[in-house]
Length: 280
Image 1 (cartoon, rainbow, N blue to C red):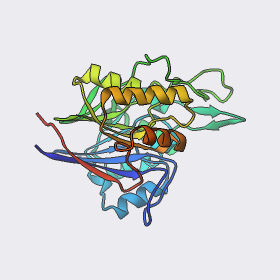
Image 2: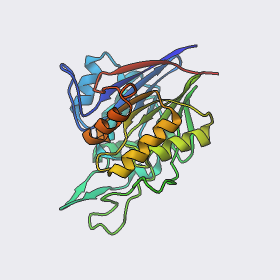
Image 3: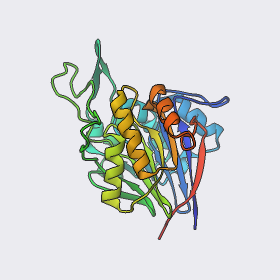
C-alpha cells in the first residue's frame, strides 16, 4: 500500500533550528498530491518549511481549517508561490472575527490574505460546505454538527467588536486521510469539538476506526468534566496515536498523557509521521 507523510510546519513548540509560533500548519505528501493544511501565523512557518526542504510552490492543494490569523498568516505569499494550487475553504473564513476578553481583539484572516483570496475568486477557490475530497484518500470533513452536550464549542468569539453577533465558527474544517487501519485525522483548532468531529467523520465518510488524531483540540479552557468525557470518547474509539498540540493546552495534554501514556506523543514543528494511505 502506498505511503503518505504528514509534517508539522508550524506549532507552538519547535526544536532548534526550527522556530515556534502560536500557529498551525501541516504539509501532507501522498503518492499523487502535496497538500498544505493551514499556513501558520507568521515567519516561523516559512522559515521551518525552508529548513525542512518543503517546497511550498509544489502544493497541489491548499486548505484552511478556518479563518483565524494563526492558521492563515502566510496565505497571501503561499498563494503567490503556488499559483496553480486551488484553495479550499469555507465561505465564513473571510468574515471579520474578534475575541473579546477585556477588550476586543481582531483574530480574523490578515487583510493581505483576505485580499489575495478575493483576487483569486471562484476560478481558484473551492468553497467547502460538505465533505470534499482533496486527493485520493484525503478529505476535508466539511462543517461539523455540534451534537455533544459536554463540548462547549462557544467562547468569546464574535463577528463584531461590540460582541453583539456571536461567531459559532461554523467554518471549522478538519482534514482526514483513509488508511486500512482507520482514519488519520488532522485538526486545525477543532472549534467544533474533537468528539463531534470524530463522530462526524465516521458518519459522513464511513468506517469505524480512528487511527491517529493530530493537531489543535481547543481544550485549553476545558473543565475537568469535558476533559474526562473527551478522554472517554478516545477510549471508546480505541485511538492508538494521539498528537495534541497548538491550542490543546498544557493542562489538557497532561491529562490525556496520564490517561493514555502509550498513545500520547510529543509534538513540535518538524514532526513527521508516515502511514499507509488507502487509495482504492
